[in-house]
Image (tube, rainbow, N blue to C red; front, side, top):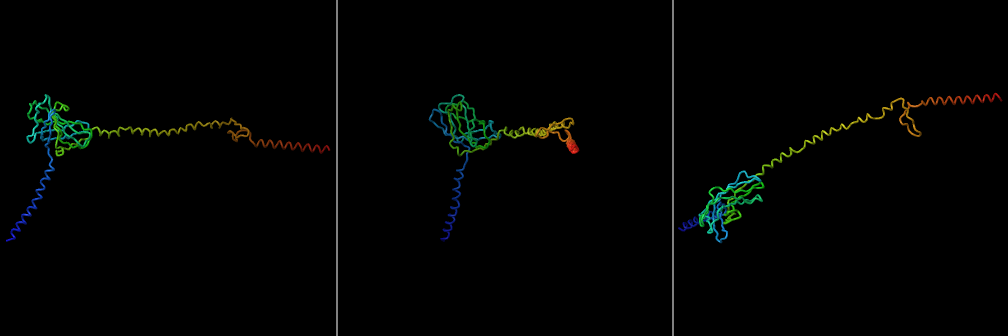
Length: 284
């Protein structure tokens, strides 16, 4: 009889152990929740009152964002949980408009985009309706890459600098983000054309100039003054103690004739001496 209570206790304990992890997992999922509902704290100029407003905002990213060209981000907002923004007790001046912003990060110095929505004339205390149509938030990126976009502030006034109501985001870290891709400017591919426009064909002209080996104008060699030396009538004199200036063996009297004449003179002189001696001997 004691076995049955023990078995029931074991079964109950097992069920408790199995169910407890499931209960612990629920809060973890809630911590990671991303929302598109923006919590705003709105302050009216010249008044101490503040309004807590919740707006569900949807952003639409452009698909053709390009550097140095204005782009447009779509903004559409609707009130959530019945927490609407109301016209302050002081009212709103004529010409009041809604200025919506988007926060952009990842492509410095680009930080935000701004859009303008028209508002009707309203009385104090009335709900300030948000624009029914999509508001275009405009900006111009000057660097290419991928950015992160999330909803930003909402201001009410006659101009961006003349604000009557300022609504600041209170839960920026929990908001849904949108990726934005900015392409390079279309003019950049023109750099590929610059190599073709470079005046590189001109070196081919220098190669044609290398044909200047025609400077072998050895025509100057034909102007050598050696040809006039072939004339037979010209005689070049040899200076004393110097070398011949170009006469050669063909100019002047032959040396052998001179030797022959000298020999004949010597022979005649010797003959004369012999004749004189013989005459001397005959007289004696």
